[in-house]
Amino acid sequence: MNRRSFILGATALGVLSAFGTRHWFKAAQGQLLAGACSDSQNNHYVGAFDQSGKLICQVPIAARGHGVIDHPNKPGHGLVIGRSPGYVAYEVDFIQGSIRAQLSPAQDHHFYGHGQFSPDGQYFITTEQNVTTGQGLIVIRESQHYQVVAQYDSGGIGPHEALFLPDGHTLVIANGGILTHPDKPKAKLNLDTMAPNLSYMDIRSGEIINSTTPSHHQLSIRHLAIDSSGKVYGGMQYQGANTELLPLAFSHQGAGPLQPLNATAALWRQMQQYTASLCVDNASKTLAISCPRSDMITFWDITTDSFISQVQLRDGAGLARASSGIVATSGKGKAWFGDKSEQVFSNIRWDNHLALISS
Image (cartoon, rainbow, N blue to C red; front, side, top):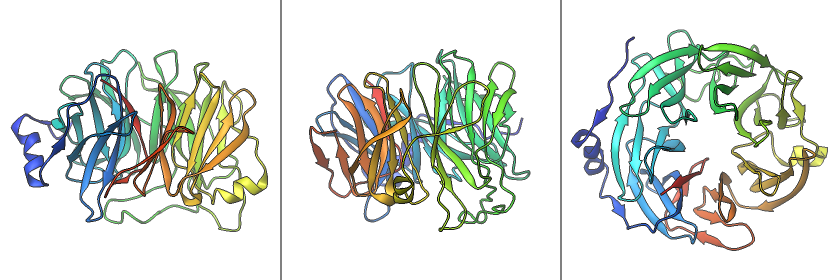
């Protein structure tokens, strides 16, 4: 298997000196919230803050990050993956504010910005594209040194986020359906023929055991959340005409079709054909979906799949479930802690996603 080897130790730490001075503070024990971010000079970082809104670290990275994933075997550590088409991912120690490892896709692959550890913590799994063929891939690495041990066809084009069901071996994959190429990173090459799907893979064999499609072939499935019962929620980005009005979020469980969440046409119109992050709070039976184009976070009742309410957060996108409840971040530098408080971080623009890091 042709792949780039990962880089450890001084080589990974050398990224810091190449992209500026690192900034870090000793964190208190407990949960941190981490996300990729940039500053007004378009320098890129991954940063973390605690639940009081105190910035714990801001670590320079070489390229814009996207998803951040908590490392189940290393308290205070997480991985940040480059935004699609991504060619680098980092393991970050958020307590010390340092990069501990760097990994890259194979020579003819790129990352889609998301990853997930297996429930037993033994493997790290990324969504990738084979640039030569355009095929979506699920790539499995062992979680100690990130060496590739297997790769499977994702069941479609453009796999974005992938999460495990509670059974521990079924991987749910959001195949967005959009063909891209790194030479034209802004171009969507197959809008007329795109074929998104939600696929279920048995990670033990790579077999696609179920696959279902949205109601319109231009509804690109992007991000997922799964509740404690195994019900899957998905957020979509519509690639068709601006005048079209379609539901942008669904639930799915079992073998049936995707079920649109219950909301008014006015709400779907307000969401402007775009969703970003999803997050489930099982304790309150609530799903949050961010809509940065609309400057709002929406909340849904997962017992009825129905819209509850919304809050305004300019360019709000990142979502995570902390002990204090759902937390959101924005591209304008804010962190929103529900009805409790807001924190504004100077010269920080948070990216689309937020993760809870156990420290």
